[in-house]
Amino acid sequence: MVPATRESTPLTGPVLWSGPMPYHSGMPRLALFPEILREAFGSRTLPREPEPDLVMDGPDQVLAFAEAGRSDGVMAASYLFNSARISQVIQGCRSVVDLGCGPATQLAQVAGLHPDVEFVGVDLSAAMLANAEAHVRELGLTNVRFIHGDITEIPGVADRSSDAVISTLALHHLPTREHLRQCFRQIQRVLKPGGAVYVADLGRLKSLKSILYFAYMNAKHQPHIFSLDYERSLRAAFLATDFDALCREYLPDSMRVYTPYALPILILAKTADRPIPSQLRTQLREMRRKLNSRYRRDLDDIRRFFRWGGLGDDPFRPAR
Image (tube, rainbow, N blue to C red; front, side, top):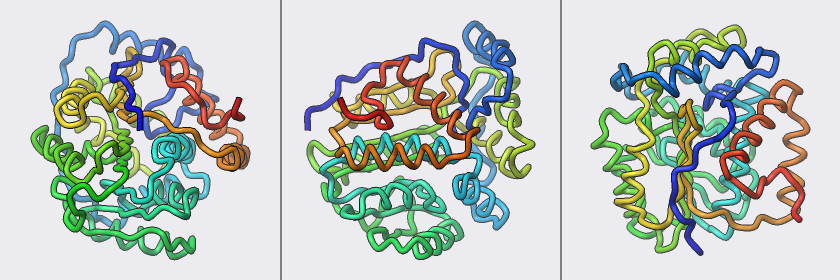
């Protein structure tokens, strides 16, 4: 694998997508300008607040989070975006570990796209894993197994045994920056030399006003508990500088870190893309087409803003 050169790449246009909560295109874009200005020019006033429940075991939490990305749930666009981008990173891999897999909505979608790859999902919540097991059985997937364990230890995964490590919207659940460091140390431990990494997580905003705005901007489209969990997650998010420093320490010269300019509400750290088969591109395009029109616009917004930020080779476009 030829490693990517690391650099922080801000999005240069207005950010209309708030991480795991898709932007709904019916919302006036001007409504976001106060948040952009506040985050671009305001001072950081909000300290990190770890989530009160570090393990999501409540049945209402598990159900709301699981349904959000399934059957055209409110996270459908962001899940498909991540699945497509993960697909580019893990091309050629035979074994992939997913840290903080939760109910396996994201993991199952990726595993369905790559039936010849063996996936291992790791999560500390027994309730989430029970939901995940049921989900993969329902889909008929045979290339996914699960480990009940702490992602700062990754039990049951040997040193230098995995071709790739992925994680989406999970690391903000860690209680401290030291736990985040331990997680990166474990990624380094289990990854084969030249292995692939894809980590996407929330980034902490400067202002509580901004957090409340994004947490509840789509409240009418989702259960209240989901909005509440999103607010708590935004409060608990780490900074892009935390991720960049840890990438430099544990994965030198192999990672590139992307953050949206002015509204760094999402952090994307990944190794270099690899060419994907034309058949897979066609499959991704068909999955996009099957989204309802609102979520399809959301996905296209995500693609556009990351393209403006320098993230090339859009996997939803035909190969040149």
